[in-house]
Image 1 (cartoon, helix red, strand yellow):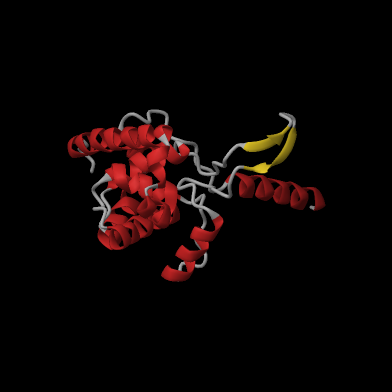
Image 2: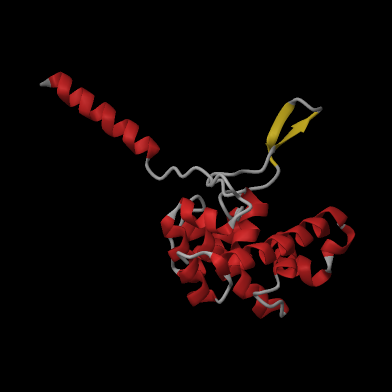
Length: 194
């Protein structure tokens, strides 16, 4: 009987370690394929559109460029002298790559105190909340993936100051976000299940 209890505890422990793990979709160039990868993601995006008014194609394009749909994505480490690890480049984490402080602001503002950055439905709700605030604070429409991405990356104050103007690599990424958003919008219009 003791062996059965130990075996049961071992199985439960292994199951607990794998629960909630979601591998990224295989075909990130097809929005229909992304949403078919995890059926509940479409409902999560519906909720964001209803609550915050941010189109799903803008959210998906931003996630692609922030984390490639990796739930526990983190920024790379910084190294001193090329070999000594000095911590990560930022506190960005999860699907949305939200920073610690901004994530805490979101949890307080929405009352979603149990939200986690590595859960898709929390991450996309955060992004909807943030992009809604971007429209309120800067006037950038929620449908403008290019400027929404710049404000998302630089923060509202940085965006208003135009801090992105001296960053050609960031502007190039914002153009890619806009192009991917346009591509995803066309694809989503043809998805039979959505």
